[in-house]
Image 1 (cartoon, rainbow, N blue to C red):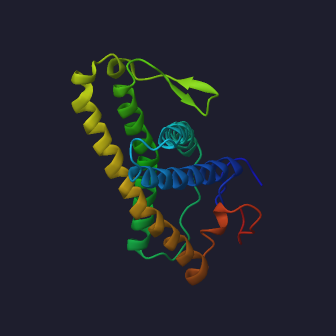
Image 2: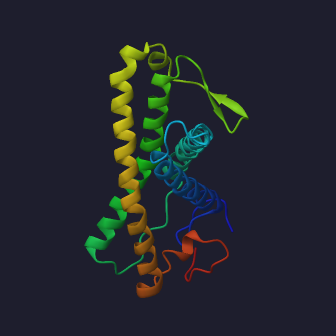
Length: 197
């Protein structure tokens, strides 16, 4: 397999970033939904919040890399014969996902920065991720409305993710098992895609 994308399939870089981000996003959405119902006094809630932050910041870093890679490495074109509305829907879905994989963790980072009082966030206990300086310098009172705004954005965009992920999976299965056009196969390693790269 090639590192870069070809006209037939995604390369190892795009593939690796796609599946790492997908696994991290689904894990973090699950943690976020579970945490929401835990009482603040629950002894495990702090550890879950720390894990949620660590995964979220990792998603942000990987997503920036993915966007940069996407800009310098064109993706395979859509398969021939697609109806215009399917082609448009697919392109729109990809654009929205690229937006969400950056915007959701970014809103979370901004929210955490407001409440950090200048303290960095530990990522898996391995290193510290800095807070946004202007936000972290605010007093709790001054930063409260900003915290609420970023939290609302973070939550609503996360719900958008929850709604769109199943649609993305259904679309992939539609291409694979109904259209048989190889769209899913080109994002899977070791699966042969017919045609010439």
